[in-house]
Amino acid sequence: MIVTCVHVRVKPEHVQDFIRASSRNHESSIHEPGNLRFDILQSSTDSTRFLLYEAYESEEAAAAHKNTEHYRVWRETVADWMAAPREGVPYNVVRPLERDLW
Amino acid sequence: MIVTCVHVRVKPEHVQDFIRASSRNHESSIHEPGNLRFDILQSSTDSTRFLLYEAYESEEAAAAHKNTEHYRVWRETVADWMAAPREGVPYNVVRPLERDLW
Image 1 (cartoon, rainbow over the protein chains, first blue to last red):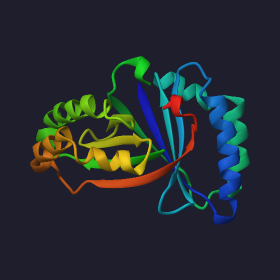
Image 2 (cartoon, helix red, strand yellow; image 1 turned 180 degrees about the vertical axis):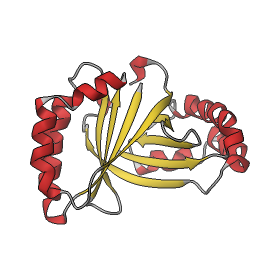
Image 3 (cartoon, chains in turn green, yellow; image 1 turned 90 degrees about the horizontal axis):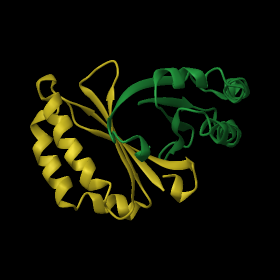
């Protein structure tokens, strides 16, 4: 099981647009085979900063996400709203190790 | 619902010790009332870097974690293994909004 933390900075005037588009992406992503979580978090101290917590059961399942229609739509929709390039940080899972706790 | 992402850098010679002590903390933390998740992740590119993904249903529940015996034991156990001070980054939850999806 792996997690990618995607750090996002959004232009202030597009924060609500970003939340709307990303929530749609969340709804589709959590139904992908191999998806474990797709949490969207907003910084408590800077409303323009977001974290996408994308957990998949394998590298292959995570890679398949990028070939979905909902991902492509999201990527194109949010492109002009980014204040900086997104940064994805990859992690291996230490705990929990049980598949059903994800 | 809130999440704190705690970024940790561990001295290389104590990586396995840190995993062991933090896994014990995980096992107790997930049974706290108000805890939603307590994931432990290890960077895929630097085995000395960890992320603790601590989700709670409220600020009060997150604060109560720091008063538990298992947290105090963990904090003291790992103190000398840190390569740098830990950094906690607070977030509000955008998705999922359903309590039972946490």
